[in-house]
Every structure is written in structure tokens, then in C-alpha cells.
Length: 340
Image (cartoon, rainbow, N blue to C red; front, side, top):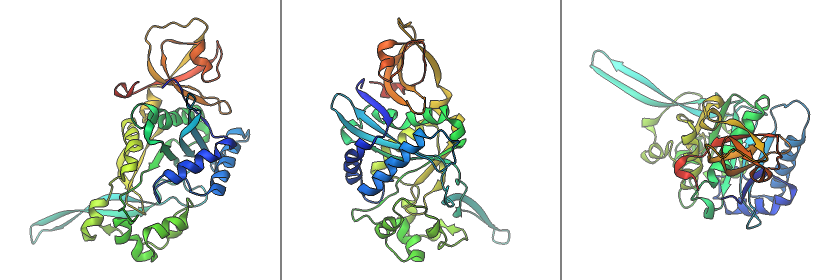
């Protein structure tokens, strides 16, 4: 895996993004299957990486994973600096209420969903896609976790709270049991139509049509109850990486398909807690070497790779992220079971 490089997206990556957007399942990717919209996302990311101004919160960053040996882009991932920057960011919050009758001697603990915008302003991890041929091994860690090293290095541009949405269950026709039971009744459209209208925009206008009162899960059809908090199969890999990071997956679900929305304080995440600086040396000390994510975290020069890193980084390894002797890089260990 020494040939994998995570870097900021470039204009020349548009054909690769078009290919990945077309390959991802309908309605579950934050990559719009539209060349013009993808070009706009690239332009916004280039501006975010290059801007010398103080961050406003509207910035979006897009990274691509390049297989240097194959000469092709094989994955992408992104960051939205502030969820709901232009409008509120809605979710359903899982809560439990107790209904009791002393006369009947009955007490029931009921699962309810509360429409909320608790995660408005949180930094959102987005746009994860990895070619199927790279799913077995540490490529997914590089693609997902290296973003956290970027956020750590530029904390002033991001929130202290990190969140990520995961796709919920849909059937072969793209229909969502949760949407059919809840959203469709108030919005008057089936799930694919609603996703097409949203097209990556804020869901606030849909939330405005949803009932503000709690939804009692026990009153939903069985299929919707079963789908609540469940993952679409394509979301399992990125979700597993986030779980291993220490994200909480029990508090929120998506207002569209009921898929889990995870969140956590940045400082509590594994990549951030275990991150440390290492210096580049012409003749590096090889003691304590372990497989790690290694990154040059300067904004305009950001690069991340998989490498064996000890107390120091040798010049050859550092050159893979464009660094030179005397510079400091950031590393965080790979999960042992997923090391090359």
C-alpha cells in the first residue's frame, strides 16, 4: 500500500469524480452524479485550500485517493466545515419517555424521535467513496482518518464536534421504508424523487413540513421500525472506520432514510488522541517502527500516506508527502488488524 496517496482534489480529477459518482448507489452518496455540480465542488475545494482569509465556516474540502502505481484516482472523501452553514442541519434525536399508570400498575418505556438541529455547526465528514477493489486493507483508513489529522492541524477552521451521516436501508427500487412511513406522508413524494430534489442541498425545507411533535416509533410500520438506524450495505465500510474512531452512533438518525448519524468531540477520536509529531531525518532512527498514517498537514501542501514510522521519518518516506529533512510531520497508528 506504499503506492497510495491522499491529496486535495485538482481540476484534472473531474473525470475520476464523474466515474465514482456514477458508480455509487443512487440516493445514498453526497457526490452528485452531475459533472457541472462536481466541477463546482472541485472549485469550492480549491478555494478553501488556497484561501488565506479567516475561515467563515462555509468551506468544503475534497480529497482524492490516488493509486500512484496504477496512475488512477480510486477514492474520495470530504469535509464540510460547518453543517447547516446556510440553513439549519436537521436530524431525528433518539429519546425514550416513560408512560406509567399507578392505578393499572403499568410502566412503559417508549422510543421516540424528536426533530432537532443539535448538529448545526458541527463539522461534517462527507463524500466517502472507495473503489471496491481497495476495500480490503488499510486504504479506507487512509481515506477516512487522514481527514481528522487535517482537521486537527487546522482546528481554527472547524468545529470541536465532528459528525457524519450514513446511508439508511433502501430496497432494490431505491425506496426507503423509513421515508415511506414518515417523510412521504408529509412531503408527498417517494424517496428517490425527494433525494433528487435535495441534490446535496440543505434538508431544512423538508424538515419544515415534518411534524414538530415527537414520533412514537411503536406506531410506525414494522418495516420502518426495523430500518431505523440500520445501514445500507455500501455504508458498512466507512461506518466501521468511524465506529473504531469512537463516534457515537446511538443518538441521531437521518430525517430521510433513518440511517445512523454519528457524532463525537474531535479530541476524543482515536486518530487525534494518538497523533504525534515526528521529525524527518536524513538517517532516521528505526526504533519503534509501526504502520501508521503519515501526513504533511500544511493546508496547501496536505498529503497523507501509509508508512512504517519510528521515532523519526527517513527522507525517502518523507518525500512521498513532499517533505524534507528537518521538517515535522504528523502520524497516527493504523489499526493493527488492518495493517498491510
